[in-house]
Length: 178
Image (cartoon, one colour):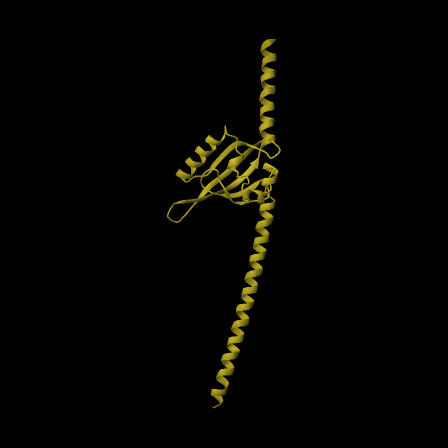
């Protein structure tokens, strides 16, 4: 009779202990997830460019785009997700777009990373040079799912390279004329 009285009490206690343990584990997992997300956001924010995930085909509609895109294109990341907003592909100059599409398609087909340099039209109308490093992510069956990578503004580097080439050409012309 004592055992019959004690068993329900023990079962209730065991249930309460289990519920407490599960709640504590859930709280620990939630705290760990928040900490991990905060580290991820800090990492992304400190990259001198923009991290992206986009559709596999041109115009490469964005699925994720970090805030660093504002420094490159002049557009806020949120604008890329608004109806009628820009896409990374829509900003590429028409002269550069076929080469970009060909390189990305070749890399996806070969399942290799790509590194390309092209020009975009900034929101203010100026031309910016972008270096893009990326690759496709694939499903377990080998189907391409999306592109992931980083955009870097290399305008200053390209302009410095052009100025150096022009300076060397001027120096060569002066030397040859003498």
